[in-house]
Amino acid sequence: MDNDVVIIGAGVAGLNAAITAARHGLQTLVVDKLGAGGQVINVDRIENFPGPAEGMAGFELGPALQIQADEAGAIFALDTIEQIEKIDGGFRVLGGDIDVTSATVIVAAGSSRKKLGVPGEDEFEGRGVSHCASCDGPLMKGRMVCVVGAGDSALDEALALSEHAEKVSIVMRHRRPTARHSLIEACKAAGNIEFVPCSEVERIDGDGSGVSSITLHEIPSGKVTELPCHGLFVYVGLDPNVDFVSGLVDLASDGRIAVDLSMQTSMPGLFAAGDIRSESVAHLAASAGDGVTAAISAVRHIQALKAAADIHI
Image 1 (spheres, rainbow, N blue to C red):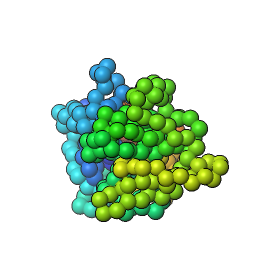
Image 2: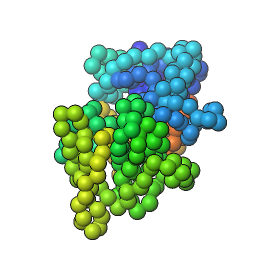
Image 3: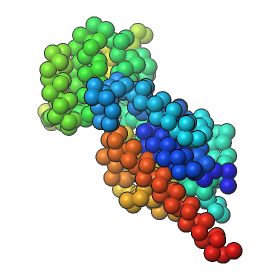
């Protein structure tokens, strides 16, 4: 085998798995299509991960974890994994450029942000429609901005945007936000953030210069209104990136990879960690724990394989 473990994904789960596996002496390869950090690199301030009391930016956390994994001996590669095959003694992992074998695999590929699926969304992507407040927020200085979503991510980004925009409207289908209490209170105290409940985006309008307004459909009245908007930031949930393991492992009812308490999937030697796995609470601290658990499980799996091989000698 080329490797003891291949870790797919360099988010918090994957990087903590890499740190743990490498420190246990495993030949560790980490593959990610973007680089260290995953989704968190776009987060302006992280508060749900152990660290400084004032929080930290996502672009700081990813590299900090990568340094630890580097120092432990993990190897990193940029590629998009397209397929995993079961072979004798382990797995074959194939990407656009990579074709390697490994005794074990940890899938920590995370999720992709869902789209609204409304007219204008694709047309104005990158020209007013965004998924990264820390990236595009400074471009919204003094402008009217809308955030779609009711959870932690949506309210986190609304707070980041409020430092630049004249007004931030949080559009949500729910009557009340589903985010944690501290975020809700912070948004209420911001002064330039308003909640637009029981509403969903029906259309995004604009011109050559970008987004100018969104059309809202009120629930359940059916009333249609137009809301001025120069930047639309979408946080309406996540879809797990499981296409490359389709048919290889069992999926749970939510479309995520089914695992047991050791992060073991239905395929022995293949583990899943982070928000790609079933029953994930989608919390960074939990994802870090998943990565550690999956790595230790991979160590034990390899030890069991070696013990079985010794018995048969």
